[in-house]
Amino acid sequence: MTAPVAIVTGGSAGIGWEIGRRLSVDGYLVVAADRVPGLTAAENPHGILWRELDVTDHDDVDRVFGEIEAELGPIEVLVNNAGIQRHRGIEDLSWKEWSAVVDVNLHGVFSALQAAGKRMLERGGGRIVNISSISSRGSAGRAPYATTKAAVIGLTSTAGAEWAARGVRVNAVAPGYVDTGVFRQGVEAGTLDLDTILSRIPAKRLAEASEIAAAVSFLVSDQSRYMNGQTLYVDGGFMVDYGVPLAKKPE
Ligand code: NDP
Image (cartoon, rainbow, N blue to C red):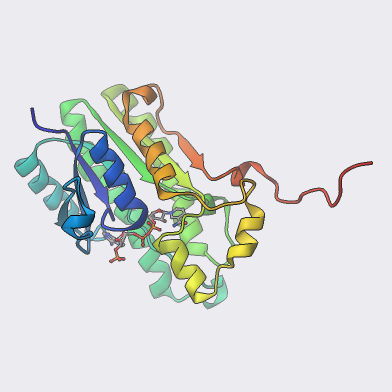
């Protein structure tokens, strides 16, 4: 029996690569659909495949997903992970910067969700996980990122409701800070300060990419079969903490 196919967009690096590794361990044949190829063969013991894809090309997403199905079999799982970031205040943000983030983080998620979802609906089964972010609550200096990550939650709950009775489950994972591309670029550019961030996280540490992958693994498994349209926050307590600790212990 051939392994069920799982596509991870932006799966060549960072969190997406770790999600691919975890799904491989779970028994999936994983395709990293990314603009760039993945890691070397030595770093890829699970044999994750790579297919070139730019998620901002709506028609190409449909074409590539069709080719993957013809070659490897039905897409059972899609993880919408590809995402980019631009740090700048709203008043200074160029239209090009705004559009670039919206194109990848929102239009790209819609295109892949639709291309995989319609195929899953025809067969009456499939699981989709969209990667949002804690930035979805609002995040100064990250307007397009925060806006698109909030929109992903809206699209997730809507698709989750729309397709629940037809066997296709759609949920989201909203990670806290992980030391991978999107975060590292901000630290290296000096627009994110690690100490400030750590002080704000109740768990007092960044997330491991494997901890995000574990949540995805759960959401595509049968253990979450009664979950539709939900967003799971994997954030060390960030979202549940108001962020203003007591100045001192009460007398
Ligand atoms: P990385 O930059 O490490 O990896 C993202 C991957 O997506 C890269 O390989 C990138 O390729 C690819 N990609 C970018 N644009 C496209 C595109 N148009 N089509 C196909 N692939 C594309 O990011 P992270 O692993 O840090 O982030 C992964 C996801 O997790 C993103 O959605 C991010 O918003 C989300 N997230 C990350 C957090 C963090 O702290 N790191 C926190 C919360 C959410 P290329 O190198 O060519 O750009």
